[in-house]
Image 1 (tube, rainbow, N blue to C red):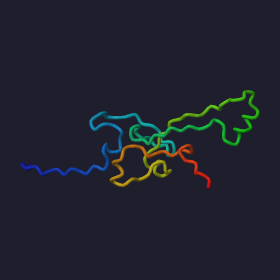
Image 2: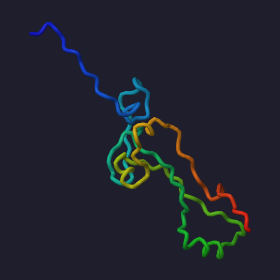
Image 3: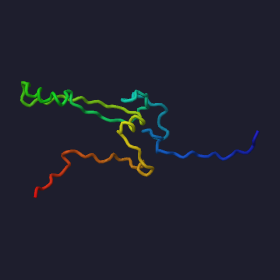
Length: 124
């Protein structure tokens, strides 16, 4: 047998926590969740998480319901659901994008634009 030891090469790391949301030596296993689009089982800390808020009634029937409603100012309830996607399904359905090596280090979420954020243009 050999008495000398060859130097081990360290593989390059692509991501800070290997694409997981846990500290380096934290946990062994994490519960798995089902991907919304592909049905794959994904570790919960690796899955892409989105909070889906939708109206219970579709937009075509909202006006009909409000006209036939007995109450004047009745707000329709909403469906609140947390959905999980596998990385490949999230990229395929354009929920997340592939980012460059430098952009991967940016950890804060991108700015969100809403209709209320737009400034009214002054009319000439």
